[in-house]
Amino acid sequence: MSLFKKRVDGRSLAIAERAHIVAHSEKGPRGSGRVSASARSDPANIVLLCPTCHTIVDKDPIAYPVELLLAKKRTRAAKVARIGGVPTFASRTDARNAVETILDRNETIFRVIGPNPLDGSLPSTEAAAKWRDRVLEEIVPGNELIVAIVEMNPDLTTRPDRIAAEQLRLHTQDLARKHQCGEIIGHALRFPREATQIFAGNL
Image 1 (tube, rainbow, N blue to C red):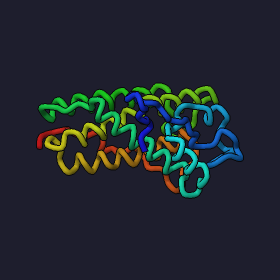
Image 2 (cartoon, rainbow, N blue to C red):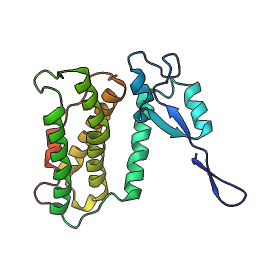
Image 3 (spheres, rainbow, N blue to C red):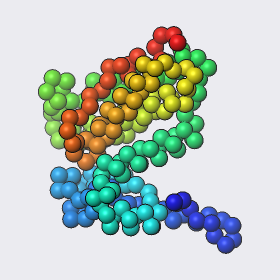
Image 4 (cartoon, rainbow, N blue to C red):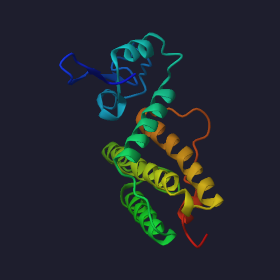
């Protein structure tokens, strides 16, 4: 359903409502005591829905779990990004330069403020909060942009590129879930090393 409704005078009226993915209250729809109050209030825990859909997802949280709402939010964000101008490139070299820039930025963030690569530890709760913010605000969107670039430049991709992009998409979903709500069912997928070679080499 559209988040805008046409008025009699021809103008659009916004009808979007801010819906919590993990409920603001521990006892609310999809509520969890394992998610901090600050995380429940974070914009990353909000999805825009029309009033009807807002009611449906909150009345039936079993049918609309956290993972499903996060996936739908990411799908919408990717579509908006494509509409808003995910770049197309004239050559694999140009596409590689763009992807490499994102990979280098994400790697730098991980190296400077990320967890210990040996045991996954962070030195303090403040450091953990800073890492969480950088993951959700920079690393996850960066990974999603790489996937979108692959999707928007099919003539420049190889089969290994597309497989690596899908592996990166799945890893990014797990990464977002982990830092959004701290809950991962089963083994969380690690960053696929194949993603570092997207658009590398010739067709």
